[in-house]
Amino acid sequence: MMVSLRERKRSETRQRISDCATRLFEQRGFESVTLADVAAAAEVSVKTVVNYFGAKEDLFFDAEPAVLDGLVAAIADRGDASPTAALRPLVVNGPILSGPCTWDVVDDAMWEAMRTFAACERDSPTLTTRRAAILQSWLAPLGEASGSTAWAAVATGVLIVRHSIVQEGLLTGCSPATVRRRLHDTAGAALDALERGFER
Image (cartoon, rainbow, N blue to C red):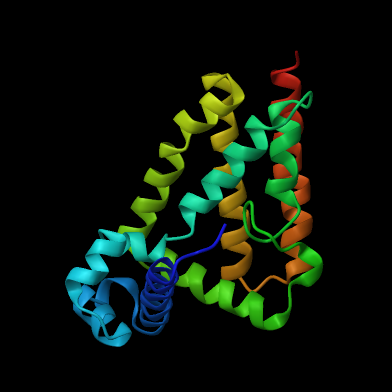
C-alpha cells in the first residue's frame, strides 16, 4: 500500500519530535525538560507536540504501544502453541522486549544508549510511576489475546521481572552477556513455572 506524502510527512514530524525529546531527556533529565523545550528543539509548536503525543510521558514511552502490539499479535496468532510458548522468545531472545534485534547484534554503542535511557527512567519518579501503569494496562489485552485473565496476570509479573533484570543490569554496568544469562535463568524459570501452572 502506498503511503501518501502527507502521511509520510506526519510520520517524519512525529519521529523528529520523539528523537529530539529523547535527546533532551537523556541530557537534562525528564523532570527538567518542558514540552516547550521539546517543541523548540524539534522546530514545531507546543500544540503540535501535544497533538502527536498528548503528554510528556508519552514522548518517553512512545515505543510501548508497538511493544504491546507485538506481544498481543504473537499470543493471539500462536496456533497450537501455548500462550507462554508464544511469549517466551519475546521475553528472552533480545535486549528489548518484543524488539526486532537479538542479543547477537548488540554492540557497545547500542548498550550504552540503552544504559542512558534506563538511567533517565530510573531517575524520574514520574517515569517510574508511568512504567508501572503501562505494565498494569497490558493485563486486559494480554488476557484477551490468551483467553485467560489469570494467565495474563502472572505473565505481566514475568514482564515486570524482565524489566527489572535488564534495567538493573544496565545501571550496574553489567555486560550484555551477563544480562542475557540472568534473563535466561530468572525470567526463563518464571516462564517455566507459568507454563506448568497453565498446562492444558
